[in-house]
Image (spheres, rainbow, N blue to C red):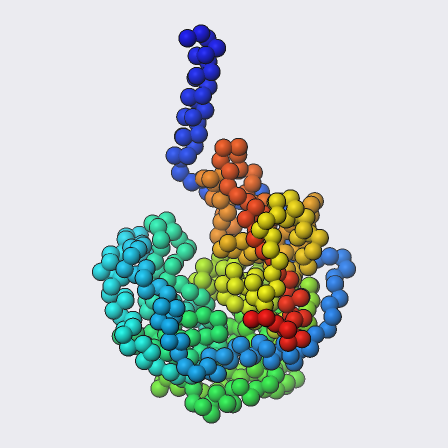
Length: 451
């Protein structure tokens, strides 16, 4: 073999060894992706100099549509009879082991024990109108234990469904064998809640609550609400609504519902500062959305509402609730809600980015890719800028770019770690559709929403 052939063979072997070696290396965590150090993490920075003046919409029509969905569990005929749909988690309990909080795998016996506690042969064992009395977790199983799909699967607890706010109407449809957990249906999520966090209602209670006509919503997140003796009652969250009883000087008097010792609801009132609330629904306003996002910037990622924080779809849902838009819980159903989406999946990355910049409304367009959703803020140097709540983005196959919560990035975040032989698709490459909330709200106000 001549020298040239030997050198060529050596180079090929070295290249293969390099590629194989890279593939065998463990994932590398990047704590500060380039976007987080170069882009201002303040949504107000991206507001256009001249914010758009939107057409004033029929607020009564928006409120009516929102409340009709909000109260829908009390208006339906009874529990959903489709056991497979309601308890979608059931098949996985006896198929996949998963890992617990001690990083040890669950056994099939553990899954069977949880399944037995659900008493599905007795479903539905209840048909009771009720209301959530404390911001609480909705679980896929009647347990507060986590289930991770892999040993290092934190924070993705597969048994965590959602956070649900106090004051949310629900229908209690079932109880577990211990009666610690009640299974509920709300307008946006099914699942198990701790029974101590929900109160039952009489028909008279339901009639009274549904007669309340005026509502307000917080302009700040996690506002502590206190009773007349200055004891903590609950927190008011961005995306939550409260029925207004009266205006008293610099305060609003709002209705609040508590759970009594016998499990039944009792209606109280609380005083809150006017400066902390705005009318519901509020007009479309880019500056207000920017203010909400800036307040939430840097907040930890909360898969399924864990730790009372937000994941990507919860952020989107809560940000636009003040406009009277009742979005679904899941990111895919959000972008396709109202048949308002624009398909971007067949475009090249360059065409996709150009189309978004030319057609999306800053602060009011959501961008969706499988398993994730973001809010379009605008563009800089030809690149789309988004706000989103995300755990991490993978690049170069083995680099985990930690985002860890609510951040502002481009759709190219982490691309600096992509290489010729180790390339992970960017957010831009994965985007499949977008939906403009200003168009959606107009359709809702005009009664043209397509369900």
